[in-house]
Amino acid sequence: MLAELLNLFVCEASAARFLRGVRWAGGIRCPYCSSEAIIRWAWYRRVYQRYRCKACRRTFNDKTGTISAYSRIPLNEWLFLAYLLGCLHISILEASRKLERSYGAFYRSARKIIYAIHRCRRRLWGSRKLPGDVEMDEVYVKAGLKGRGNYWRILSLGRKPRCRGLKARRGRGSWKKDMPPIIILVERRGVERYIPSTDVEKRTIEKIVSRHVEPGSRIYTDSFTSYTILQTLGFKHERVNHSIRESARGNIHTNNCENRASILKPWLAIHRGVSKDNLDVYLSFFHLQRTTSKLPNLQKIKLIIKT
Ligand SMILES: [Zn+2]
Image (tube, rainbow, N blue to C red):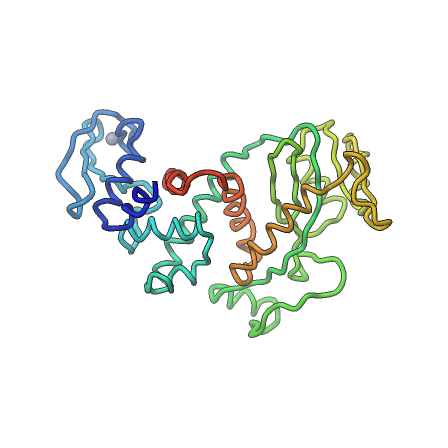
């Protein structure tokens, strides 16, 4: 398995062979009109097979229509980047340093990978709601506006761009205070969701819950006042009271949520401060890593290609 994995990164030809195998596993289809009447049509850059569609007469190659299509870096390095990000969980900056490539080229490819995963998650979630026993809790993370692209947006807020890191502020965090809450929902049988939120007001909680949890489900929370709205919305609501040092009462607890929060925080810290605009995208990435944590690395790379 390891030899197979390392072989991907040796040269562009071996990477292209891998892409071909994964992409056309269910037969070759035209990416423009999805016809299956395809003939081989020479090579593209010597390593990628080109094809011609008999139906719409357009040509395409192994890369066409995938997220690696317009990348500036060769495919074997692109796959290695996917491996670093998806399997080893290294930040983009670190990855570009490790491969001695410019940050710019790497950042563009890495961003594409992460955004593709994000779109994929949206599609997967759809309108499916969590049924049964669901735990709910919130965690606050430091996330402001980051990146040079935000320069004018920051000025429009009437302040200068920050030259030092974010400071923690007192009180409950919110989007405005650069401490956005992330609502964690864990269904007791294992399905989990991470939803960035602007605040934890009752109305916001109502919106999130009605979008993500099946009506009539049982929801476990701590004794934070905003959660009292759950009962009026028709959910069965069980609360554990942390303020009297109660961590669990029988099966009433939010330990699964707290466990996920303790994994999420150091995970985000690796990226050295995520912009709050991109928080949702990074959470999708985190979610993918959580759901594929037991898969072999080769499978994970296949998943990333297929997004
Ligand atoms: Zn076609």
